[in-house]
Length: 120
Length: 120
Image 1 (cartoon, each protein chain N blue to C red):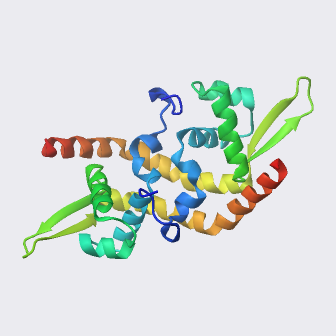
Image 2 (cartoon, rainbow over the protein chains, first blue to last red; image 1 turned 90 degrees about the horizontal axis):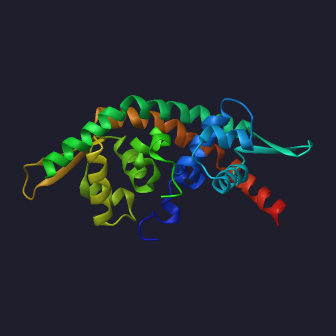
């Protein structure tokens, strides 16, 4: 792909953290940072996510070792998701970034308006 | 778009930090964290980036208020790029994330192999 760095230049953040480029994954991980959660509860809390997209997102997070999936032997069976220690250590680094984004949202928006006004 | 959260659910990280989803932007910002840099020097250091892609990346970063552009009155004119205080404060939060990615790259790769082996 011409738009991405060549492999030897690949940023480790992008190599490892595909999930950061994905808003659903971030929402799910921040939600699980509050504690383990069942599939249906996650879907209710996130609201606008489809059942399929939530399943795909959780599968990606599980594949990366960030989230653990446990099938509870209930009737009907329920599936519980938990941040792994690896996922918890990542969330620790993502929280300051989220807080930065919340704190500096007005500055970034103001910079964009200013730039566009100068460019017009 | 069906793949992204609805506006009221938008993650502030994604709203403000489009740049984080872009490997070139990360490489450029990490490079500028070492100090101001001329366009041509940035291009040399990053190596595989095209002139056009570097220009586009820098324009996005400038628009978001993360990078400042200064035309030096030389002959021929040269353009110097510097992280703004806003950009520097963002890099402070990105460095722990990059370090996490470097440190945990083997764990994430191992988790992926393990998951794929179980799924096969």
